[in-house]
Length: 273
Ligand SMILES: NC(=O)c1ccc[n+]([C@@H]2O[C@H](COP(=O)([O-])OP(=O)(O)OC[C@H]3O[C@@H](n4cnc5c(N)ncnc54)[C@H](O)[C@@H]3O)[C@@H](O)[C@H]2O)c1
Image 1 (tube, rainbow, N blue to C red):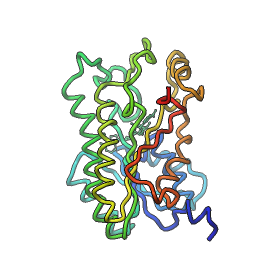
Image 2: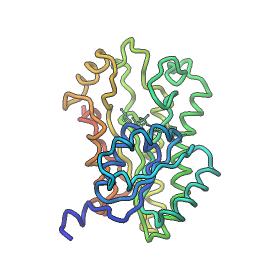
Image 3: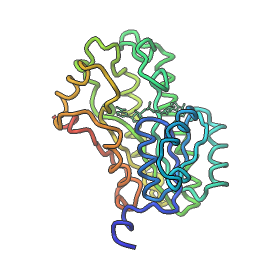
């Protein structure tokens, strides 16, 4: 095996991608499958996952990606998912927590109370965001640990955000009706320290845990938003979902074998000013 395959290859490694039907999540599934991994998408939106899977060009790649319905906030369902995944596709090597609650799983819906301003932020939206983003990552991680341990070790990656590192910048949003709500930032900041806790408490089981903090992905936002976002990004553009493929391949593979408890910012320089 050449050095590059040794560092980045994921042949015969099974990786669960929670939220794998999403924009960034499915891009992860593609690159990890290309590196040889077997991918298990666990997502509430099975229809979206199947639709994206149908766009994958080759049978070989498509056959390495499997879709499971799962609501990550339901502990019993999460445990049941891991039992089935372990039985059918075990041993399990990796977990990526790449889901989030944004009011509507399919689009940015400005009528959703998810986008309410701080002074009026509803308790239900606060609870829902933390339930999915934080509790969901906790339940998935807790359930994964015994399976990764059985495998002799493994890798966990939590997906945070620039807004888990710095405050959302309210000047970006103008009159768009979307903003980045308080609960998003608090849940994403908590994920970074959750990652450190996990990393330090399971290192003795040969399990590594890291965080990836992406910046904003182009998703047909308004021209005003795109212009504002671009101006505040040193690299002068929004990301495409595929801009994170290199980072996830690094974090999930032996290329990052000496890295745990870290938070990798890949954000075009957004947090560098
Ligand atoms: N897109 C961006 O600009 C951006 C920027 C920084 C960070 N992030 C983070 O990256 C991750 C992925 O973002 P994305 O843009 O791909 O999001 P997305 O909305 O496209 O995908 C999120 C996925 O999570 C799934 N999901 C929601 N609730 C769930 C639940 N209860 N159980 C299981 N699955 C559930 C949705 O069905 C969806 O497939 C998120 O954690 C997000 O916070 C995104």
